Figure 1 (tube, rainbow, N blue to C red):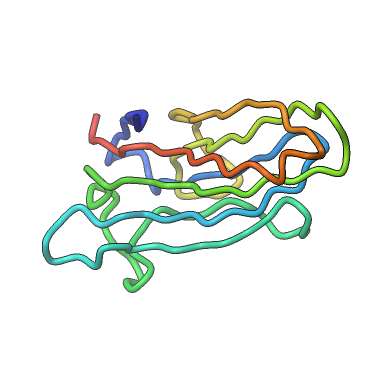
Figure 2 (cartoon, rainbow, N blue to C red):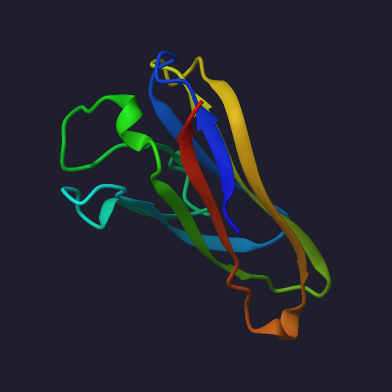
Length: 138
């Protein structure tokens, strides 16, 4: 079940930061699903992993628009589909979607998070957890 993340339309842009903790390799697909009939089904699609040095923080908005009011995120569904691998036995790991608000990427206010924790073994063949959240006006 998706966790509800309330946000204030007066507190700036919405962002999500993807974090992976543990001796694991995590690749992911992030999707922001549209909530209205006049929107694309998926309004944002990003991919990433915890091995490359790029930032894993994304502005939650319709990627086809240069700018849009933050309240457009009301009722949008955030989905993070992961693949987790390790080369060791009994490795605990944690994946976090941390949601924040603010117009300056360096000065964000955390508004919620969704966390998945598990232990993976070398012979598991990989895990495929999915984390999800529903964005709602506070």
